[in-house]
Image (cartoon, rainbow, N blue to C red; front, side, top):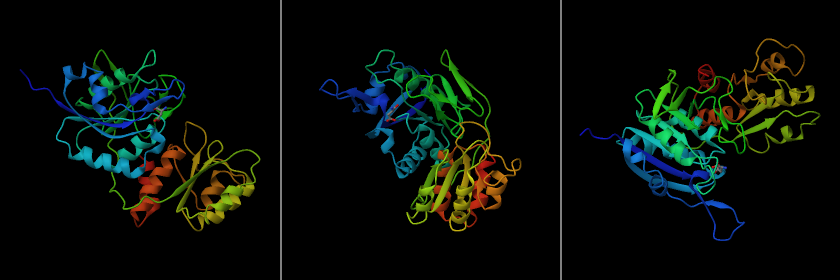
Length: 324
Ligand code: ASP
């Protein structure tokens, strides 16, 4: 008999681990352990020997960068063939991206969750857990990925694009990097991406969006609020109003400012629009383009790079952006 591969499952909470409270109407809470999840998915034992650990039981809005760093450290130490992390879907696009920058393990690390809690009709957690496990054990699995609704997504591009649909996860810039069908994983090849050390402290980075007819008073608070950097989600390909462009020029003299877009897909431009507040003006004012990285992901990257105190933050930032 051939030995089954070893799969490590780490549970962090989220809808996949939520159950109704005693009082009807009070809503579901993350109360199921990683062991509960595997008991509810007996098919997992057909494909692997499972080890399960519950690291936290929370809504994913409460996860912290350092918890993801610790998850990556523990994952890298596991003597196993693949790792699945179950967590809330609300922040999975951010946690998976951070993990892709920190995880030094050799075994695939796969994030999954559920859009419907286990007692809802059509609950998707069990199927997602199986698909994520198959991916984590596949020889072609990428270093870090997100598996939801039988699709494999790259952490650089993936985003939650619907509040309730089971097909909520999308990678608008490039589409999924693989699929799972009939228990088989089909992968498109992906390039390896840079990995960083864990900083003693992540730098606090603000994220602000351009909105129409805004006086920009919030931009005036960034420096006094103690932020070490700012990511601005501009209109379109990276544009802001003239008054906000002036405010950004002043902020960029003192802290790093990244230019991303509030549009969900496409690159920030670098050399097309010439009016004040458009990308050429903003880049001349010292802003650094986020390429195809979303503002949320750019914020995490900048927080890590500034937290590490690397000598040339700009060069490090651009090195990752070029991979996207
Ligand atoms: N609705 C969320 C989920 O899908 C809650 C969370 O992110 O924890 O799990």
